[in-house]
Image 1 (cartoon, one colour):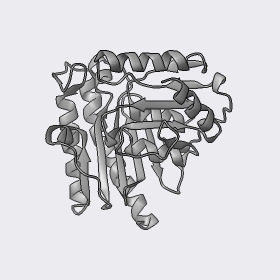
Image 2 (image 1 turned 180 degrees about the horizontal axis):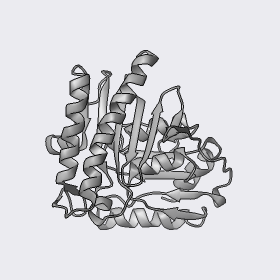
Image 3 (image 1 turned 180 degrees about the vertical axis):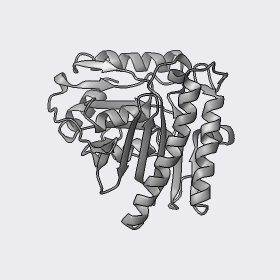
Image 4 (image 1 turned 135 degrees about the horizontal axis):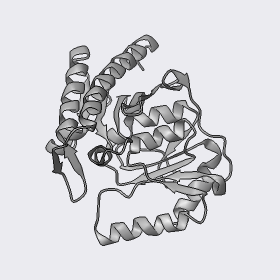
Length: 270
């Protein structure tokens, strides 16, 4: 594990990169977007690409020896293997569909793994000017103020977040909606904000009590938020209840009180 001083330095550098990319997003948010399709409903814009270039260049300048994994480069070139080396995992614009529609839940997500363990996390929503940060062992913060997960102990009083994902084949849509239908009888209400990273941050600051997503894009969606949730006193795990695998495209998060009941409910909702 890197020394605490260097982890703090890594965080400062990541925040600087996120703020610079955030300015590009903020400017583009109010302008006409040029949209490409990665899939039927999976979108990418010139802003996604510009932000990834900006962030990668910034990180390379400071840490040329570190590895880099980004959504847009990886989407174009195939999956990059995660090693034990210090690795920056970047989603330059999480919530691209929101961005295209002018819906303000968009963010830059930057995570640093060391020994494959998420260690530094930055998630920045430039439209709402909310900066979530976390360093393993050092707590989680929103705009510099410490944050904690909710203290809710009852599933029936919990606010759940999930996403429908980008696949639109009949079996995937049916499985997704059947799971949601089952869960709606067990929780207070459901939200879909359109950003995996911001959903994790919602858990971290207590706005949300439960979150799961199956089949999201890749580790760039969760690398930043996972650190922030855990440093806010929450748990990040596989929806089955097993240990979280950052490369699995399966994630669940909650406060510690709700994990067992939540994973049981998820298991019954298949």
